[in-house]
Image (cartoon, rainbow, N blue to C red; front, side, top):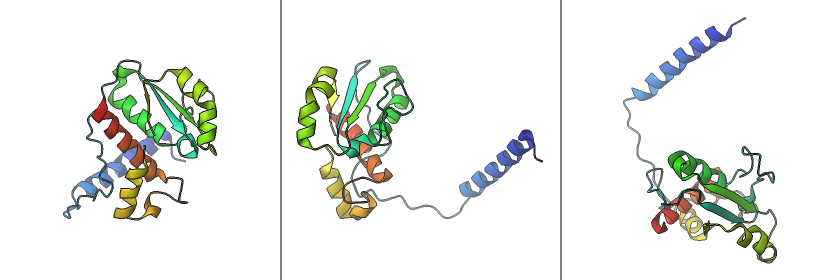
Amino acid sequence: MIDRRTFLKSSAIATGAATFCSCTSTKAREPAANPSGVGGYNYRLPKFKKGSRLLFQGDSITDMKWGRNQKDRNHYLGHSYVYLIAARLGLDMPEAQLDIYNRGMSGHKIGDLCGRWQKDAIDMNPDSVDVKTQEVFDAAAKAVSPEQWIWDGVHPLPQGHELIARNWIQEVSARW
């Protein structure tokens, strides 16, 4: 039976060896192509005031099973681009103490959104409401293929959500 200390010690050695091997490779990696034109992690941060409230509205693409319990801070944003944006901005600008909400509703159409707009948008008094993405997906799909970004013609794959998140940060940073 291996004890915890032995396990951790052998794991550290294996991890160090794997890191050393990957760092000493003689073959240089080619820089990845950027078919979408959306920047990576070297973005300019938006200039939000402390405590800014960011609201994301939409359908199933925004929803992605966000927890309806606002006190459950591990699940309240779901698994969409909203979560990725909150994670990145929360890490990169913690002093802003952003207040981020996901109000996407799976299956909803424009008429449904209009019906809940007062409660889910206006009454929340957000500093920003955004989710404009079609042009980004069109450009990315032309460069690679739609299946790289969207699995069923509608719903993004994880890299599709990352594409939305990066585009959102890039666009908002240019305005704020």
